[in-house]
Length: 331
Image (cartoon, rainbow, N blue to C red; front, side):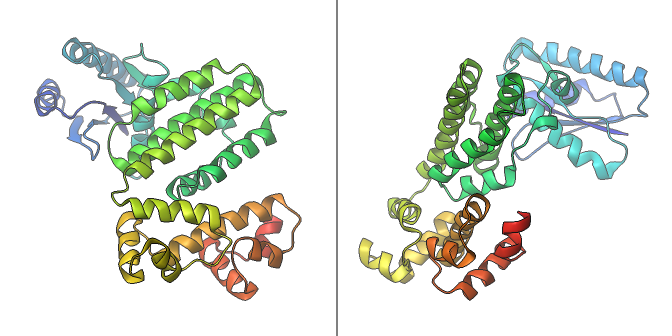
């Protein structure tokens, strides 16, 4: 059985060599760096309770020794998995467990199983995170704020205040992981305040506003990374005028740039062509209206900038996989 662990702050080569040296005689342990610079330890054990406890005790001892010289170091543990095929799931859990140092700063070894026992499991996590991730990438602050309120409004009567708060804490952690996945750098400073705001929330509205603020800060961090201010302005223009006629020719004239050059800048900064970005953006707005309004499909198509319903159907199928009519029923 395989059991991945991640040691945060492993960006120091000397420290990596030290950990490697400490574990050299333990052939059931493999050590390497991941893309984030964290140290990853993979344990290959039989999976008996004695072996599990012995390994956890060893991790605690390892943590005690490391934190003498590196107090910020933490170890995150995934679940014990049977077979190599399931190892990535446990690795992802170990990486996620590291994020919870923001909530449990006194723990040196953070076990994913412990998070579930403490009430931070995904058992009550009702957020469709893929939708949030898309809104972050599209840098749509307004729609992200609306989505947060809508999701929490739908569940406020079915969950206890504690469950709502735990879900909110989970959302903050996922915002952090999403941004770090894009930027490949530690973004803890942005989220410390957000976590505290969630913990200090005394009312439902305060809780929602805290999450909306975290979402806004996440998107602002991405916007600040844009090297070309023109592209930033174009993205903001799309956010406000997506239902109107938009083209590189019109925007190029507005910003006094050749449309071909503007298209090249846009692709370089966003990783998408202008047409791809516009269509994805409009389809996301259409999905919201299909979920939350009684408008007909052709009315929604026009609301988001498609004047030909047939073309709207084509683009919707391309990006969502089903027709807008089916999405309205089943989405």
